[in-house]
Image (cartoon, rainbow, N blue to C red; front, side, top):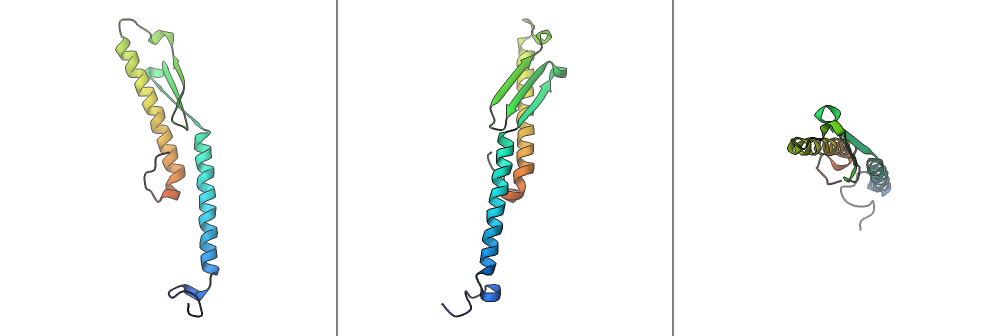
Length: 114
């Protein structure tokens, strides 16, 4: 290797590479912290005017499902099923939105499965 470092490296020293590595480590730590915050969070959504409530954890698991007794009608089970699906899907959407918001800066806008 020629004196002065690698060809094309500004300044010819390892100081720039060291700075890049430090920045990468800081970004990795911040991404890990954001991911931990997401995992520790819960995302709540309701449907049917609030008669069905779903809570999804940051791990994408359904944590809680609350159904107001007024929503339970043996004559209209399909509507109750639709409200449950709507509440769960909305909670999942909220989780995806927060994940994208917190992690988007680290992934360069690339969609990542969290």
